[in-house]
Length: 509
Image (cartoon, rainbow, N blue to C red; front, side, top):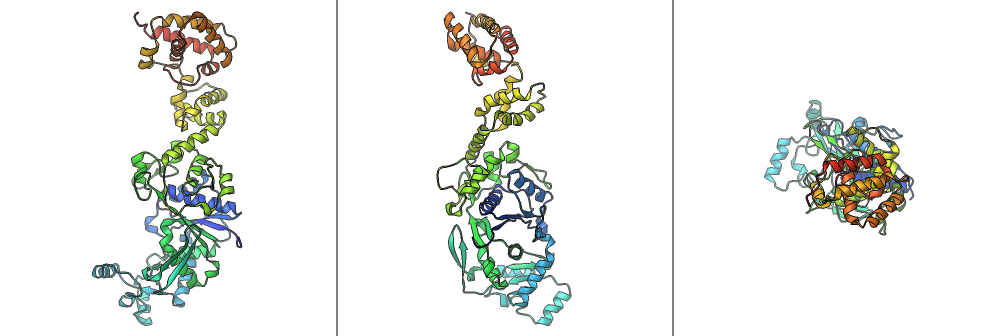
């Protein structure tokens, strides 16, 4: 590429970061890293009425949790700051004046009531070349009248002057050349005197130019605004530095049609935010992927494949592998169904990739929350390792491995009825004697001795082993029985069998 790759993720602090926004940030990040470029985090907070306390901190925390590194931003600093739009008022005011002096924009004094009346009288009303000369603006007023209104404190907006009848071309890396006629564009508001702040359209263009952004990678929903942004670049005389546009496919509902929403997650039971969000206004708590037990690497891998593929059937890829393979050539134009069940699959696969010790570390807080103490890190890791193939999330470790840490207090009624036969207690007493005579309780050795004993006594293998499992675990579940008894102290295994003999009634013959 001829110019340095510089991309930006520019969220508004109006609430939690949506999973679609996180995917946009991810694509920006891996594209920048793929080409040795820079990732900018810009906070677009010009709409002060929608500001939500804590949202900016949430955005930073979510990106950090997912491993999306920021090179320049509010926290990191950089050569083109400030990186928060509310701190760039003077810069925007200067550029508004540039457009006004060049005749590329004009001042409008229309009140909300006057605009509402125009829309009422003209159902398809649009503030443009066909209507602007009938409105209250600097195009229809004298300079003296305009100055008098401004000096008198009358609120106004600055609108961009759109030339009619022109085909505007947008070159998009995913969608190719998109052509939109300027007749369908209205004279967008660029600045509001009420709060002395620009609108998204002006601030976005000025910041992208001054921060030397080379690629604007954003959601498909912003595609309709791209022609206006092209015209603004031309109006400022910046066409030679216009960034390459990339409009990503939408994330779609898992079921039905339309864009993915929080309501879909609430209905189907999956999060739409990376982290848990506590709404400071309503007090509502929305679930997050982190708190649900998703590994950040799994979520990143899952999101990367929603609208992009590496060109082959590879699914499991680390962030470094994603960076190595990423190209917009393999991005889809069509929206991507949000297959949340596939996300669960990714998390399972990534849990499987963790070492037993790493899974044990995820397990330890769950044990502590239940008051389970006195077990070594090695014991916890081995217990977690024996059941990790059976879980999708760390929270499920307890239900799969609880018996390693506490003796059963009751026994599964269904299994008792099916597995605890007349004569079972006597066989279990014999088993206790066999186990007491084993000095090497490694899985393979104990299994051979016990199975040889069962065969020599001509007992039914399934009946004995299931009763054995029921006594130790409390139900007919869990990993290989002799893997359990290898880890669990022999004295504990024997104590549990003896407790079952005393506790479970022997059926009548």
